[in-house]
Image 1 (spheres, helix red, strand yellow):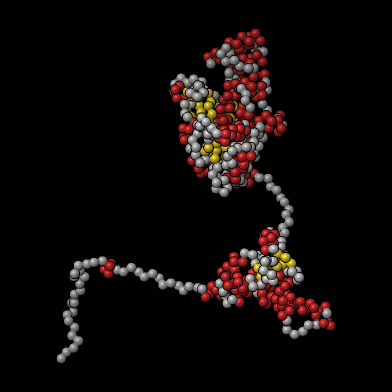
Image 2: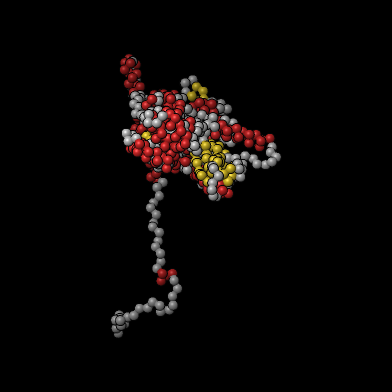
Length: 540
């Protein structure tokens, strides 16, 4: 820093044509040297000598020879290939500001800072590898990465600490468990894998024993993460000191509490995560067998879980991220207009008549309609007089055939046909054939309105009999699947039965006796005094 101040002072003293303000805007001495060299203020020999003197301990690449990053020159395909994301949408979701200002005054645009961070995290690379892409020095890149990371973590770090997230709902966890099981996992309810990560650091000046990791034999910080089959981290805890055991870090993170609250399938079954032998066995946390002598089945279990774990941690399972819609996501959802045709089953006039007038009157109405139709077509063979029994029975059979044809379209008809051995008789009516010859009851589906009226009529004929009596009357001629449930519903909605089965209003419970009637007392505790004297009611 002293060398830079002396250098700027000398430039102002001996080269007044160079603006000190422009030179002072340079962040490092290397920037000032580069500026002087490009302005032909110093020659190549002087630049090499000064640059080597300043840069003995901190070697720096010639970043000034590269252009600054310009997002407008990058296509969408190149953007996703290099940064793995579509940047405009990602910047909007993360609420990236227009400008990042680092602690030492380095300024970067929001999109440039996001690109630097994504490029650094997208692939294993050094900071020096980013110089040619972004045209910035290593200190600048480091400061920008720290600033952007702090901004994202301060605003969205809570998403890594809780399992109560839209993409970790029970149906999503069940999809993860199915994907893990389909890859060959021995556990059918495992939806993720937990592991501790050791990040080596330079040897600290103090607290070396606390930060020293005996297993890896380095000074380090530790993190704990849960990774899902879609490649995303579901939970992240840390950093903690390097000497901390994985089981202790698990207890400190509160992960087991989160699992007890949210790790369940849509049917309420517990789902678990899988860890290495350092973790304890719990309902929502499983680990491999630890015995020194394992059976073949135990070895097969450990091997299958180890293979599946490697596939999940390396994002080898292609599981899409499915989240439930929220108010924010619905606001950004693309409006789609679709023309739909709604099919509605039209109500039949005969069903309306049956519901309004009942079974007996409906049969007579239909019989009169049939007679009118016959007399209109055959004037020479007109039928007169009251309705006959044959006409009523003919209408009843037509209603039975209509109910059977409607019931044949239902899903349950195939099962009923197999169980009841339904066959057509000479009149084209389905009957239930059994081992008793001659006793073939007529089949009626339980979901038809005609069947409901048959049960109502049987209930009234039996003088509002109970469920068993109503069922016995119906089964004299018909066989209705699930008849008991239908009879219970008919009896329950019968107004006559409700009227005669109504219970009178009970008397209110009596009040409590006064304390003087329930508690003991001494003689003359309650007395009365006559101030008027004796009352004479008879004189002689």
